[in-house]
Each structure stands twice: as C-alpha cells, then as structure tokens.
Length: 198
Ligand code: IMP
Ligand code: MG
Image (cartoon, rainbow, N blue to C red; front, side, top):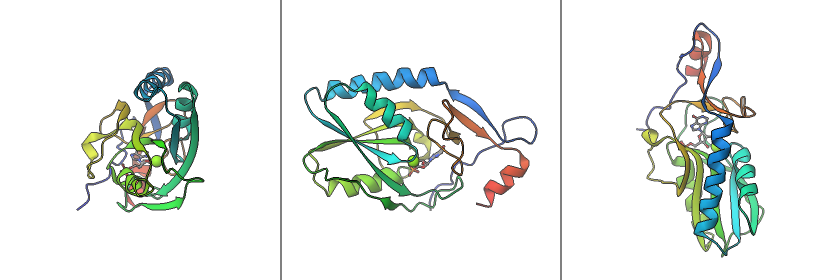
C-alpha cells in the first residue's frame, strides 16, 4: 500500500487558502550558490549536463545553472505523477522526453522535491539504460519522512518536514509556482474538502 499523500492542513486562521513562508528567497539563493560550488568541486574538469524535471524544477535549474562555472548544458524532461491535486497516484509517466542523448555524459538530474521517491526512481531507471558516464541527483527540497522508493539525492538544498509546500516552482493545481519563496500551503475548510476529493 502506498503511503498517504501529505495533504495541506488548515494551519491558518479562518477559511482562506494561504501560504506561510517556510524558506525565504534569500536562504534559497544562498543555498543554491553553495550547491553549485559543491557540484563543480566534485567535477572540476567535466562538462556537466543538467537535466531538469518540468515544470517544478525550472527556477531551481536556471538559478543553479547560472552559479556553476565552466561547461554546462541543459535539457528537460517531463513526467506526470500527481495530477491536479496533492494525492500521488504512485504512477509515473513520461510526457516529454529529452532533446538529446545522454550517452557518455555526466548528468545532474535537477528536481524540485524528493517526496515518495517514485518519480526519481522511475527517471533514474530510464536514464541508466541510456548509458551516461555517471548520474547525480540534485534536489532543492527533501521530505525524507515520505519516502517509499529507496532513492537518495547527492545534493539536497533543504530537508523539510512532512508539509505540502508551494512556491519557487512547486505548485498546487498549477498555482503558486511563481512565488519567490517556498511556503506551506494552508487551506480553509472549503478548500480542504475539495482537496480531499481530488
Ligand atoms: P515523488 O515522486 O513522490 O518523490 O514526488 C515528486 C513530485 O511530486 C515532485 O516533483 C512534485 O512535483 C510533487 N510534490 C511532492 N511533494 C510536493 C509538495 O509538497 N508540493 C508540491 N509538489 C510536490
Ligand atoms: Mg516536480
């Protein structure tokens, strides 16, 4: 049985949907700069191929990519797993493949959040079959409490508690991706019952 998806809980006052800042934009940027240094230090002389998982990882990848000196290229892949709500179906499907081959490359998979691990487990299987030189995983956020698949990231921005978060690329039904901070989504009573029905 799959673990229950972390549903947004009503933490705010009243009935309004809202977002409470968990990680500020300043902390995010500072940590991304550190991660970029760490990645380049681990591979000082190699071209790095960053593969971002659409759409959540877009802001993370662009900010990370700008901070890694030297030879860096990008590509994107898209998967669907969550649908429109906050419940994971546990099923991962490739909806957009990479533009180019990763054979022989040093690939850094860039993902917004490592939650159950189902998405990254699926993607790592797909990528390994394509014979890259090596694969590393960089995630902005890690929710270790929710792990089902035995996946770990090589570079983690922030380890967070089991809360549903939005912002800096992360969405709730495609909304809130544009927030510059990462925040905990707080739902009012009406929205909460709607989220349950998803
Ligand atoms: P996993 O397959 O369960 O590890 O989930 C990975 C994907 O689920 C992420 O790329 C997100 O798109 C989504 N996800 C997981 N947790 C959250 C969250 O707290 N907020 C928004 N999206 C999430
Ligand atoms: Mg995602």
